[in-house]
Length: 213
Image (tube, rainbow, N blue to C red):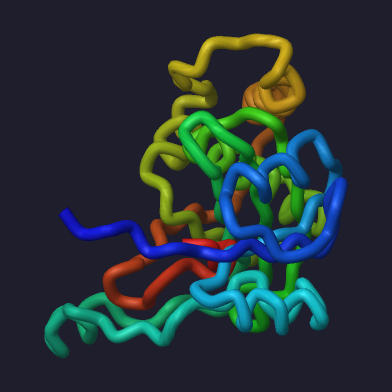
């Protein structure tokens, strides 16, 4: 069994800021801290350098992507429609600390962000992100499409319900309050926005990805 590679965690905004050598130490700084900003790095020097910089310059940054699909497959899929927004969620554990956001697909400019929440799942975050995106586009009377990389979120939105198996408790109440609002919005609003599955195998990580993998 290969040894898990060590990571270093930069916290720009939290109970304490700095570079932390374990996920537990990092989690202690961001848990229940509204608007926490953090990311993992492969070396201490990279994490220390990032701490001196701006969080926005590092969030969403991922390694250069090379598709494993054939040229024929890539041609069939085509390129993303940049007249769109993209949504995604990140969860450190399942359940774990969760957050979600929406960005302009082309520029990656952040349009909205929620969290981090003390307890949630990736599926819940993806669902909330998608509904938030639909509401955002309707509010701005936009004809842009919306990308998500979650088939589960697409299914829940289509059925206008949330089928999460995560049991409700005081810790995840803020998340489920948003879920209840999202389900209510779906059942009381109509929308013309086209929801499209992001082709990760062809295009790499969705632009709204938090880049913490």
